[in-house]
Amino acid sequence: MHDQPSLAGKEAGLYLRKSRAEEGMDTAEILAKHQKTLLEFARKNNIHIVETYQEVVSGESLYARPQMLRLLQDVEEGLYDCVLCMDLDRLSRGRMKDQGIILDSFRDSGTLIVTPEKTYDLSDELDDEIAEMKTFISRREYKIINKRLRRGLQQSIEDGCYVANAPYGYKNVYVDRRPTLEICEPEAKFVRMMFDLYAQGLGCVSVARQVNAMGARPHRSSEFSRNSIAKILRNPTYIGKVVWNQKKHIKKGVKGNLKHITIYQPREKWTITDGLHPAIVDKELFDKVQSIMDGRYAPPKHDGTVRSPLAGLVKCANCGQNMQRMVMKRQPYLLCMKAGCCASTQFSFVEDRVLDYLQDTLTKLSLPRPEMPSGRDNDIQQTKLDTIKKELAAADRQKSRLYELLELGEYDIPIFRERMAAVREKISQLETQQAEIARQIEDSKIENPSALASRIRAVLDAYETADAAGRNSLLKSVISSVWYTKAKKTKPRDFALDIHLRSL
Ligand SMILES: [Zn+2]
Image 1 (tube, rainbow, N blue to C red):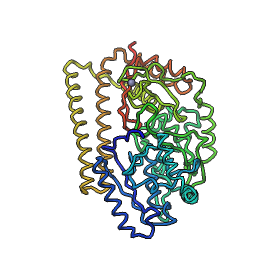
Image 2: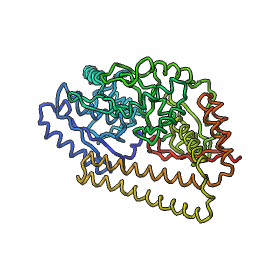
Image 3: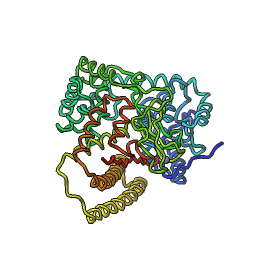
Image 4: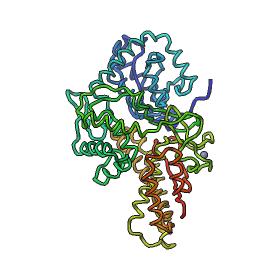
């Protein structure tokens, strides 16, 4: 046996249902008893329970909607650190190697299964085995149930309703009490524009620039990037299809980092079916865009040589070593090679952030320049930094307070989630401000703005069509170093870059 991981401070979903041995007993009574046991356990281990999933249906339809499916979806979305239940058998009746989607969801999202007896971390091979053995007996039963569950999911996919967040250009609606998508015209017109512009020969960076300038705003960030445009152009949802298996979730790279990462699977692994929702672009235009993109897309080479556009540029701010590009689960990541040093990030996120920085710098350089800040201005900036630091500490305390309020019953789950999201949003805003001010201080040191602007413009224009090595030398022509930081257990994009431009 190995050490039990500490559970203190983890966010959990609580799953309750009767076991087969308890069939025929009073459901409400049994579940209340289990709930009490689990709540006591949670309190003792300082686990925060956010939501309870109580399965009141018994017998054959146990795995059918809604509680198990709802839990499964939330687990896949990475909402929890762990799920608490009486024993493993309540959660799932074994894992058929190729089809077990319940335990797979837990393993892929890095969500722990916590029972009073033991904590299962399915991303740990050993636990995976135990989980399988423990449920071996009921495999045959599981097989039957799993088939039914899969059919249920498949039906949802075909109905176009297994969609947690509406893609840009659509909104979620309910038709006959089932969720599906409806065109959101103010956004859809930009989607058509993106496809049109790209088909006319513009690159993703230029398309992003164009639609941003026209006022298009993505759902979860302030403006479109090269990457988000590419994702839209690749998304078959826009021709009325439904994509399944597009995202995978992984946790804890081998380096002992990361709470949770969403990774996008290669297209060969997607399952695409006809949806019920309307198309935004026609298939002809979509196919044209795909063929242009296929021509431009350079698949990663697996010949052992590291071919990273950021090679030699990004250093870990924690230990000072060069960050390396590494393919994990088919997706490139940027990571510090020192074990357990700092959390890694999906490579394209870092690359995009660097390009965004160049784009922003270019924009700023084109603006009339403020006067050189005096020592006094630098003092003001420093004071601002101190204030932000204090506000960050306050936000942290607020987070703890939210857990208390949830526990005291002052907040229900939707309100808790809303407030928690607000606090997290605030923290991320403060961190952005912090980086921005640090950057302003840095920017004020630039000596020859127009020469720098033209070099940056040249880099951005050539970037998209260059190969990895070419991109690397383009970046190195304007950037001298990039310092990377990311705390463990933070969201995929919660990393910070301190970028230093080359002096001319
Ligand atoms: Zn490091």
